[in-house]
Every structure is written in structure tokens, then in C-alpha cells.
Image (cartoon, rainbow, N blue to C red):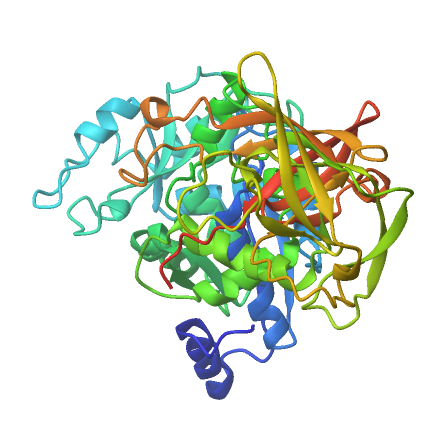
Length: 541
């Protein structure tokens, strides 16, 4: 991993030094109930990155214990996202691979008097679980004999009972200070078709019970989880000890990644998709990895961000501006430059005849980047905001009698403005100075402003898409986002772009001069420029 040694690595170093383990195996354990978001990128960074650091392996482990929410579509999407970030898994494993073994272990716990079938409803179990200061109340079914529990459990498997009519609970301690140890449910009845096992099962193990078993059966040495599983660790350990796992995997928790102004919950992201608030899981405004990829954010920038954010034990929240700053820094070093005009007005150079090509620097920060040719001509488009009939003080763009440089070309002087019936400027007539060509300027004219432009004869029509954050504010993370969603977060404009953008490969990221970073794509033969991140850095470093 790129960052300095973190507390996870310190634990692993201890286990290696003591001889507890000789080789490291981790696993990345998504549930296939939605698309992965940027928070999962950090989990990948921790799990895959830790394995890489120690020359170990990392499995892709699908926690598919809840068939009511899981789909093959999500499995396929998860694979694509991991591959896009550049990680490779050792084995692809599913909890459902182990359903028979997990069931056999449950029967073993029943025979040993460590689990019982309970007839209480989910609400009744919650009501009797107790509080942080008061112990729970034992179920009236807790003292059933192992023989009766075994019969009932097998009847559950055979489909004799309805959903919620019975469940299997571990028999631990209803007075435990850790509520997760107060006879937790380890199997529930669920008559749902599973995306892999079909209708073979109508009972499914709970995650807290299946998790340590699946880790052990995979040979996982260190189960790296986000911090919300810290209180569940005693149950993880209880399962491993009671079932005699040796060596028992070690669970270590780290802080999850939280970003302001983003919906960081698959449940709410699914709601946005299903209600049509966004165009889909891969909408460029979504924090899903598919959305970020569609927006044009490079995989390398996401990994760089994860490395900079680091691996910590304490929960915290990162400003979205910091993430955008990392993406901006990444693209600034690598993205080719190009020109597009968002709100064009015509600029006519009255004393220019013919046409020529000028050299345009592709990226002055990239030593391998050179120049490319751009066709210059008599009629151009510039931004409407780059000309003013009534300029404010210290205005360095075009005004009547004032000069500015056209990027990579010549200095021009504005002589006349043509207006329409409403008094709006539709054309600026200029004079150019032949001796002021960029790279060979002998004119002696001092022009502070540098304007981007496109050739009116050769430019391409483009659709420019810009995005605001999905959430209007940065507060109340983790709450119901429905009232805070910015439904007007996508803005579409017509623009004029130089032909190099139309000819570029789809997915190429460009820095549009003085505008922002954009991804090029073509839709139905139309040039679309989709904003990746603005040029303006709002993050207070």
C-alpha cells in the first residue's frame, strides 16, 4: 500500500512475527444488492492493497445470504468495477458455495445445546433484547431440548413454516453487555429464489453467523471490516471458538470512507435509481464506481485519493472538495488541452485573409506531450463573457480599442461591436497584428488577456453537460436524503468545439481551456462533453 504503515499492518506484523500465520489472505466481501460506490473503493484498497503488500492473496467474496435483494446484474457490475480499479482476485467465492456446510455447522450447534429454534417474531425478539443498561429477557423457547430443536430446524429447511414464523438463535448470554451476544438470530426463513441456488433453500444464514464460517473455509487470515462491525467482533469470535476453527481468522476494523454532499448508502442509491431521480446506477452524478467511471474520473485518481485519505481507526468525514482536488491534480498532469466555447459570439478579423495552422501545446506539464495543429481563420467564435461594451476596472479581455491574445495565435484589437435589435452583441470585428504570432511575437504589444477560441468554419457542434452535487448541503450524513436531493443537478448547454474533440477516442478526458475537465463521448453521432470536475479548486488545502 502506498501510505505509511497503518495499524492494520502493525497487527499483521505481530501475527507474522509470532508465527500465528505464515502467509496472508484477505477478502473483499461485497453483497450483490447494488452497485459499488466510492466507499467500497477504500475497502478494496485496504483488502487488496494489504494482500499485495505482504505478497499474499485476496479473494472476491460475494456475501449472497439475502436473495430478496441480490441479482446477477450486481455480481457482474461488481466484477467490472474491481477490474476497472486494476485489482485481481485470487478466487471468486460465494457464501452460497458453503450453504451446506453452514447448515451442518448449525445442526452441530443445536446438538451441543448452543442454538435453539425460537417462535418469537422479529418484533418480539427486539422487545426482549434489552437495552445498553438493562439485560434482555430469555425466550420462552430457549430451553427446548436439542432433539426438539433439531426436528424443528429440519422442518424449517423442509419449508413447513412461513417467513418469520420461526428462526434459529444462538444460545449465548441474554445479560451480555454486548447486545449482539444476546442470543442472536443465526438463521431465518425466507421463501425467495436465490440467484445461484434457485429454490433449493428456504432458510438462509444471517451474515454475522455465515461471515466467520466463510472466512475460515476460504483460509482467510485477516478479515478486514469497516468500523460498524467492531461491536459484532465478539460474535465473530464466538462462532469461530465454538466451532473449533484453528487457526481462527482475525477480524480488524477500520474507518469507512465518508464524503460530504454524496449519498453513501446503497439503499438510498437504489431509491434514487428506482424513483427516476437519476438516469441509472451509472449516472455521472452518482458516487457509484460505474457513475464515476461514466463521468470520466480516472481509476488512478480514485486510488490516489484512497491512499491520501489513509487507513484510520476513527470515523471521520472528508470534504467532497478534497476528492475533487485530487482528481483535478491527477488530470492536470495528464489530460490533453483543447478548446470549446460554451456561449459563443462571432469574432471576425477584418484584415485577415486566407487560413493557416497554429501550434497548440497539448499539455505543458506532460514532458511527453508535444503540440498539435489547429486551423486558424478569418471567422472565429469566442466566449460572450470575453467581450464587454462596458468593462469593469482591470478587465483584461476584449473591449473596444483593447487588445487580447487568441490562444496559440495572434493578438487582436476589438474595433466594432455588431448588435441585434435587442442590443445584444452578436459579432465583434477585430484587427489582428501579423507580427504577434505566438512563439514569434515581435509586435511589442502588451496584451494581458489570453482567450480561447474555435474556428467558425471547422468547429463541431457539441452538447456540454455540467453537474452539481446530488445533495444540496454537506450536513446530516446518513439520514434520509429525499428532502435534500438536488433534482436540478444536471445542466445541458450547446457549445462549439474544435474538431480534435470530435475525432478523439470516446472516454478521453480533456482540459477545456478556462472551462474545466470534460470527458468526450459520442451519442447518436452527436459530440457530448461531460464535466468531470471544474477548473476552480474550492478546497482549502
